[in-house]
Length: 163
Image (cartoon, rainbow, N blue to C red; front, top):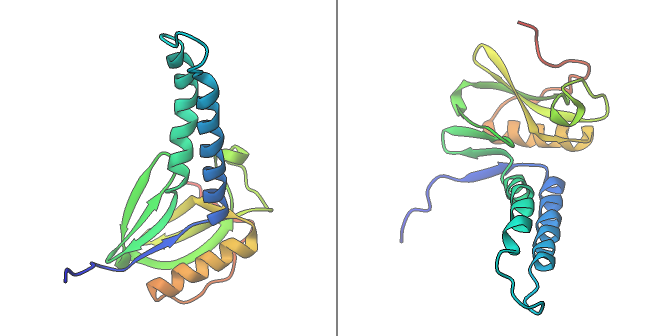
């Protein structure tokens, strides 16, 4: 029997994935409304609507993959537009900080937190793993346990060091 390879652990906000599935179903239904096979000739009528729906569908598909994945000796952070791989040994701590990202125009939120990794010489924020404080703190603890790191308390009021 083949070796299944290293264990793969996904750290993600599952509510965002459920929302992505709902949007995919909505966009698939809208494609059905764009193309009507009963309305006579459909030539040349499908592509404008399909283009209108294609970009939101791509974002909804990407929403199914955002988060952090621990596989073997690497931690991969998958955001909406960027994927980063960090060696597991370089991570010294996992925590949660106030959310600062696209959805609030990069200001500091006190209602939502995001995951933060302390990597050799820098901090790596993962805005793709964001949510209510209780949920993000639980995800930070889960990731810390997977990586074998000590637990940290939530650091509210902090984000992005200047310089």
